[in-house]
Image (tube, rainbow, N blue to C red; front, side, top):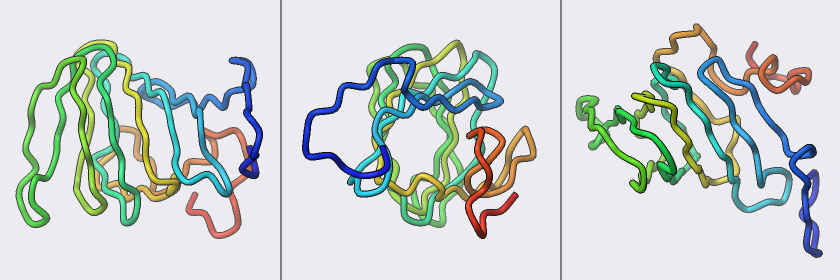
Length: 149
């Protein structure tokens, strides 16, 4: 989906972009050049967690579709990181600059809609020692020029 089409697109499951993560996977439903937003289905395996991270520009909304999570978050820009357990049906709004992490208490499915800043990840802590930004090996493609490896 390199450019935004003016016609309706029907994308069969086999053609959706699936990104393998150490904690599960992301299925990218909407993304790319000219797309004003991104939409993903995120699956986390029980007992795993995403990076403790923030985004400089990306704003995201996460909907807990299935499972239970422990959400680590920074309520105030200079405040401590807090934790809360959330169940299916809960919606989370994360503005740019706020530290957050999702910990799967059981197998979890999230639906994430965000601005199209998909490489905007600053990792403060990561169980898998991944660097900031897009991880090329997870995407199955060479790193774009200037990408951190």
